[in-house]
Length: 64
Image 1 (tube, rainbow, N blue to C red):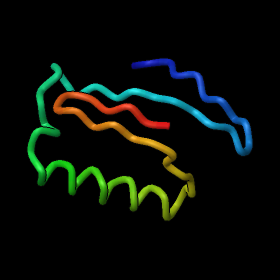
Image 2: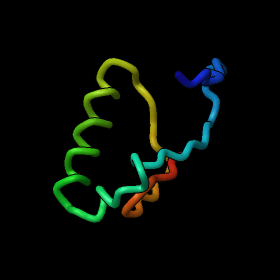
Image 3: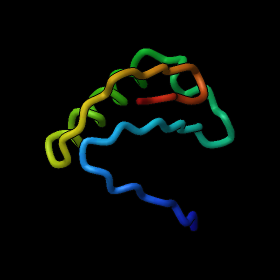
């Protein structure tokens, strides 16, 4: 299991990248993008955050 470092800076800005398993191009399908949007929305209800920028390409995403 990964040992992620978690920054706990109130009001901080963070950049992260997420890559799909085996770089499968899941995000090439518009329905997958809708699922991703719904997932972000659901998480934001319990743990509020803002997305300043997001770039979604077929096999990964970058987010600030």
